[in-house]
Image (cartoon, rainbow, N blue to C red):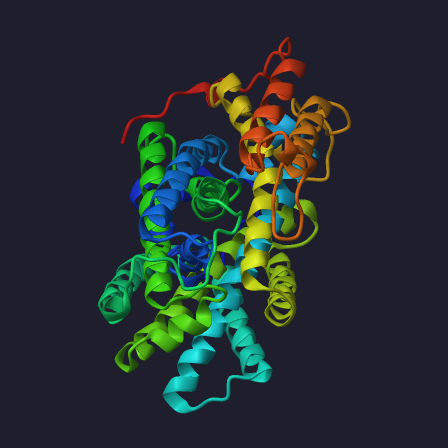
Length: 474
């Protein structure tokens, strides 16, 4: 299989051969990994039992999908990734906001996947072979996973799609076996000595809904376009792409996250997940657990690293996608080492997802408002001006920046950061929200309202006549 040569340039029609089923496969297969499973552990680690954990995850996931899935339609119409597509609202240079947000999201989730996957692999090998569970063995496992991930990401979309199709079957079987493996120890009660993280039920439940449920779909706000840019709007309708994206996110996120909740309760995993997960596994399940940790981590981290390479390529147009991917892998691996040896996993995960959600949500809202205003009609060539190191075009605005959009994002992100609560930081707006983290709602609402107000009298940039053609339903 040849290495993908495309970066963030527009995908030609003849290469857009994927379809809605491929979207479901890649969203399912890539998410069946410990990097997503571990989010199901968060609600029990916050002090919630089975049903509060399940309702928090399901509610947050459904809300997140309703908000995130429509973003898939943007790249369906532009033929490039979402951060580049956002140049229609932010300007061809202002779309760097989306590239940075996407880079940070992918960086964090890649590091988390390698971190958790490596820890579980070392724990399983320790029980199977007596391998010492030391910093050196963990570092070696992180490095091995990172190397495999780089190979998958460098080869690109086609290889990742094939891997996802295999993982969507294999990982479901491995997780199904895990249900039986942990069944004898399962309990619906929260882990022992685990009090409500925020002191009472509802604030803790809402935190779980955001940190464990909502964060899953929000992680894809810049990623969905990496896949839908390979889908032809001439052969597949927007409606089918939208529903396929929603279904892929729903199944791909709920299966691993609910498995994470189930195993966390069975393993009594309060302050840590990887160690208790391995310790509670029956001996016969250690090999399947080892395979799941290795294969799932490479599949998920490979997809995240692929997106990181595209975002870095968008930030530094002179760099090739391959070079950008290798650099991104090195940075992500460095974060794994720092996180594993210096950070508390629960605090790091919670803080990361809440802060990135607050920053990323207003960008996504502004991008969606722009999609609705222009009715999905874009000038794909004008979006590539910055990548060609040129100037001009209908998305040039002022020096390549659309000031109202950029300002609206900054205001929304600022309000979100002031309303967030994490183990490391609490925003001053919490005094007005009763101590409940409303950063997702406030950041998106503020960014959207400010953008709508500042651009109320501004007509959307006209697109070429051919861009206005309606897709033929598949």
